Length: 239
Image 1: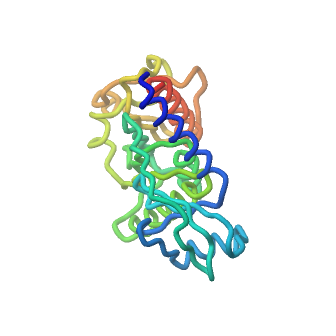
Image 2: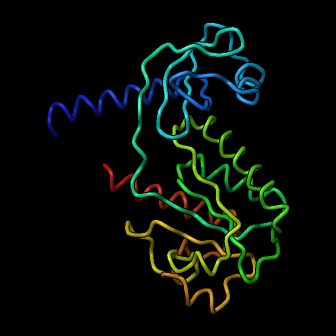
């Protein structure tokens, strides 16, 4: 590693530690940061940040900067920094489960660093969002992702997409299936089936099958296991 690259890596590490030390929130524009009502509530009511205290802000697209809380909002107190998007992009799709489990999955996948989250309608899906319900559910999950980015001090907000017909998603994805091969660094897009499992036709159209172990996992457990493994493999690749 060249001295220049070493200095850049050290500076990036120092900035990363700085961001993890303070309250963190999303704004529309880091050049002129202003908190919307939700962000202000999070910072001043939930976290109880006092005026003058340091806080970091991000646009969710890699840019972030140090600010200070000031009069119910923030003022810049440092230069804008940029963290490049992680490579490769990791996508996890999952058949929509019951109750509040989609929120839990989106929260955890965001926290560990998954880049794209896709809600799927599979042949054996029990839960299906119609055209009226889907936008409301996706908006709710997007808010969950924002909260998870703030909690985990990240600067990239994952895309939350769907619902998508599994048949259109599977040709580019490897499916989590008992008996599949071990995951590898070439696997970037994953699909978790419904509780009733994938149909034979769906398995046939998938790019391949990977295994998370010998146990049969719930949708949310399988999604988290796949996400953790994929992010860990990516981290190893980028060392």
